[in-house]
Amino acid sequence: LAQPRTVNAARLHASLADLAQIGATEGGGVTRLALSDEDRQARDLLCDWLRQAGLIPKCDDLGNISAVRAGREQGPPVLLGSHIDTVVRGGRFDGALGVLAALETLRTLDDLGIETRRPVGLVSWTNEEGVRFEPAMTSSGVVAGRFTAAYVHDRRDRNDHRFGDELRRIGYLGDPANRPSAAAYLELHIEQGPVLESLGLAAGAVGGIVGITWNEVTITGQADHAGPTPMPLRRDALTASAEIILGVERLARERDETAVATVGRISAQPNVINTIPGTVTFSVDFRHADPAVLEELVARLRALVDEVARRRSVIANVDRFWTSEPTPFDPGVLGAIRDAGAALGIELSELWSGAGHDAKYLAEICPAGMIFVRSRGGLSHCEAEFSDPADIEVGANLLLNTALALAEVA
Ligand SMILES: [Zn+2]
Image (cartoon, rainbow, N blue to C red; front, side):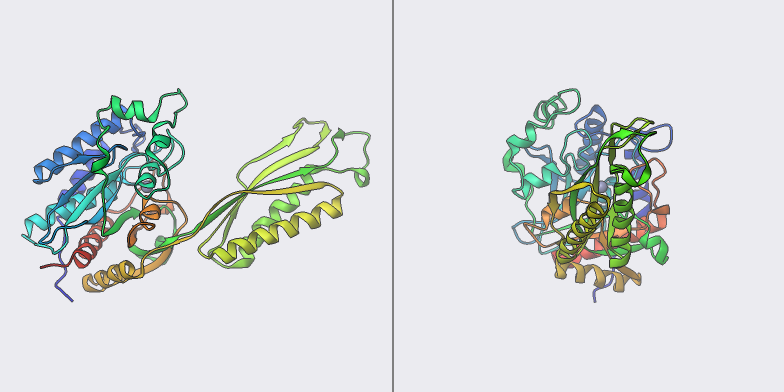
């Protein structure tokens, strides 16, 4: 193995702190919604930093910003990146870490005078979060061929502002010719979950992004007066739903330790104090790395719903309305991350991401992978989001050395 290189951690922490000033909230977090004035300021700063590093920032028709450090050979770069938009009152590290660790990687390559065979690039994807403009990950999605630019430009926020108009307003509507290409894609990100913390590890190699399937369950009983109707004669849609909801929790717990199931949304009709609920609808979100397990969980949900409905004389319907297939990351990229960990003397866990990332779409067009760093308390998308500076340094060093392996040091 080649001698591992290390980043300038102090410079990386300083850049993270500088970027976190833009959209800073009183609670120590960041609100930097996609295509807002804060997003523009953050983009301006990123482009300044890229120019100071001797690179030429390019902007495509989705506002994706990229820059490439030349290698000995022409061709698509080993692309490193993430996003700089945030949720409302989000944290300082979600997204920003991946972009600024990519910048730090490029700065370090210059500091050390390293020549690579393949070019190494940075990308900052527009609108990863999907908070202002749904859906999420629009702009990596266009590059991967999932959406058209016209579709994305027509997304509207709650104030009816168009994505395309806002992109032009902040001065980042660029040229389709500037869409980034990639020989491989690597994203450093905070874990946004408690697994690494529970294992006592600073970082992990991400095996892939779990599959998600969303269902809407509707239970129809009979609305009736809460007083005169004896218990045995009721067809209560809410008590039937309560049994099913507890059963959904059991389905995941009994399947295996990685399966998760969530009922996050429920509405009861007529939702008044002295009427037996007549109709209830609720959502069921299942996530797992194995598509066969997702199918099994949905089948068990249907069986559970049928059994409860029959016993309680209610009518039930399960509508499975959306599925995102699991995305395993490239074994070669995973291997390069593991090798970088070994060379740096860092113990790594392999874990799957329960949340979506731009790397999911990049995995459809090139070998892709992700590195996670520990999130304190597993928290993210909130002001309390925090990753220890030492963990961030570990993650950045993993990114640097994995990138060097993929780009092949001359
Ligand atoms: Zn993110």
